[in-house]
Length: 304
Image (tube, rainbow, N blue to C red; front, top):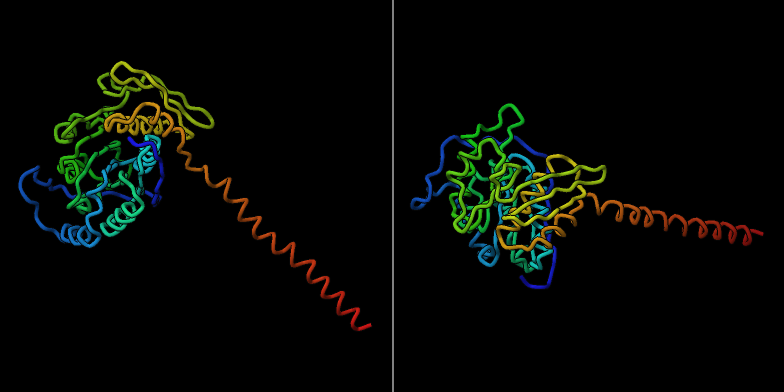
């Protein structure tokens, strides 16, 4: 990987919405798919923007929870590895037009990796039609609301991206639906699993939660290393491990993984920028007050 680093981030952080994919599964890796309205739109937009994705490696992060967190971790890992990377992260639906505009902007900025999140709802709409998937990541299947998709429905929606022959696939070995998912979700060059399960490729050996962060001790083919984050929820342990698994799958070194995960702080910008805005508002008030007093004194002297 090259030495130059740059972060090119287009981030859309929205609230999660219900994901209700259709039950009908797309045919697997057989011939051409039916030209739906969204596939036609994707084809037209891809042509309009000049096929920018051809020059970039597209990483898709999907799952019921943790998509944005994992996407940002991956974004920082790839950046630490010296690559130019852009991220489009949202817990809610990403439309076809938004995706292709983002890919165009990322290409213009010189990115060679792009990380995009996608709930089942976006996958059901075939937003990645006409694109080549470099890696596909599945965080988990954890239905939390009445009306959420069943495991079978969710698998059907996920097939739209996993059936596009991604080079690498990352799966949660602790997910109760793993045995079903592994049958159809496979990478052309490799599949990496992660979790506490002893059979995981990247195994969680132990973890700790602190007031201001968390850390997890990991083992990968006999090699042990520790990653830490500013995030301090139990679920963040799994999200860190998921991102690390993707990093290992695409060839990132452990130092880049450790530094990348450690550098992501979702609250890091606020304390720095907020005071500057307040100072700018106060400065004109301090300068204007003396000026008004001087004018008043001049008028009094003239009157005398």
